[in-house]
Image 1 (cartoon, rainbow, N blue to C red):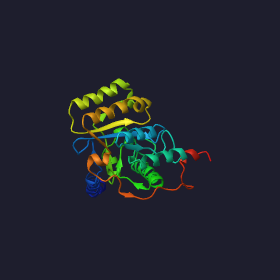
Image 2: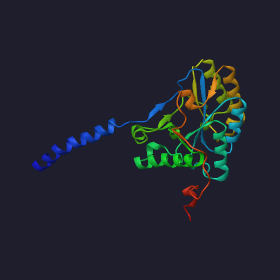
Image 3: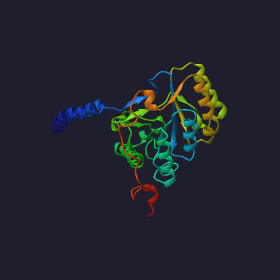
Image 4: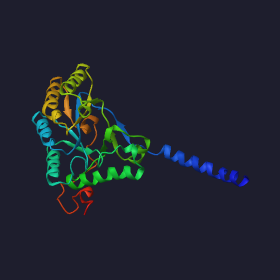
Length: 254
């Protein structure tokens, strides 16, 4: 018994210190809205999907910019020839490209090693394809906790203050009404969540929202612009396809 007490006397301070270090570890900054007045950041999750080109063209035609939070392996492999070319075209059009993790898990369900891998894999892909390093990440489902923020402390988390509802079954009318209500509320700015994988978002809701927002006097800008921050921590020329451009999941049976 005495030995057990003696052991605990030495272990408890160590355990307390370990807890203190973890609790005081740096955490990623989290933004839930824009900082620059009179701006709207239209964001699109879950690509690069086939609708991305249409979204990009629509925004450019209206003198607007968007922000795309992309995955590495969700609906399609980011390294696919058509997918990578689509993403490069979107980037070249002046839109901002950010991380949405590799394959869209709830990061709070993962351990530290898995969380880091989800971030690293998509970062590597964006560097290879676009030549960029981004600090911006949107955790899937907007789900995060202190551990996720600590593991990805060098990132900036981007959530939202407006949800079009397109990914949870909102009708076109419901999404349009949501934009109308936000505008009627005279909000200073808007960080809007949309999904490029939803067909009616592209065909119906987005054209409506762009026209209404611009008519109300909002500037449609990237997330970086609406926060007054740089979009990337480094920028190099577009990458050239090589043997490393593949998704491991597609070769699992090799």
